[in-house]
Length: 136
Length: 111
Image 1 (cartoon, rainbow over the protein chains, first blue to last red):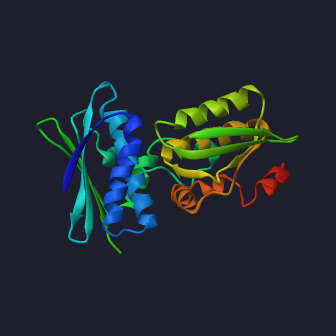
Image 2 (cartoon, one colour):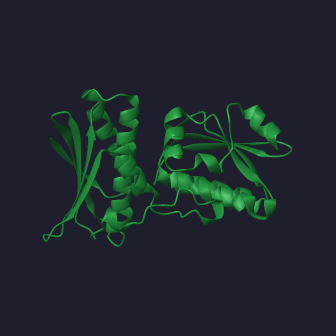
Image 3 (cartoon, chains in turn blue, orange):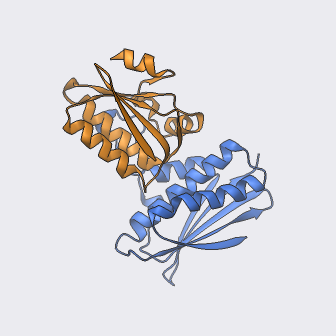
């Protein structure tokens, strides 16, 4: 598992997607899985930049990605405000246009696209988001 | 991301190329603010050269659709949505909010 540090800026999302996409591709994930892994990681990173580092323009995002057996493990660590995806209510996908909520969609996608999503806020002021995608 | 416009008699064709994420979605939102200001609410979005779209892009689409459908003054329709993007839109429950077409001419003809 390799760890890379990115500045917590939206402009880094291209590189973040590229990074996880390349590792997923090299480890035999197909087109659809690679796209979905990139999308889930983008949503996770976007949430950290937008919420955890809302009042901190120079935050850093630590990204670890690699295989554990047949599972691709992606770990995102930040040192911003704690933000538990589980606290965000699921969007109502049946709601009609006028009532459709605009937030919560990214977290919903992360949960749908990955096999597992875990979040841990530590006493040392670090927040750890772990996402797992199984092969096949 | 790159956005180009083509004006038709009854609608505006907007082609979105490249990648729409949290960094670029504001550009898309600005495009819709401009069409709103110009009083254009019948919009055809050509996605044939769109490579990627995250929920930040979905939110811009939703806001545009809401604004267009207000007072029955128009609608946003989608053309040639790439498979991966269509799957994500479907997962987000967005496909039922947008009419989709396979061909830009059919979409323009819808208005």
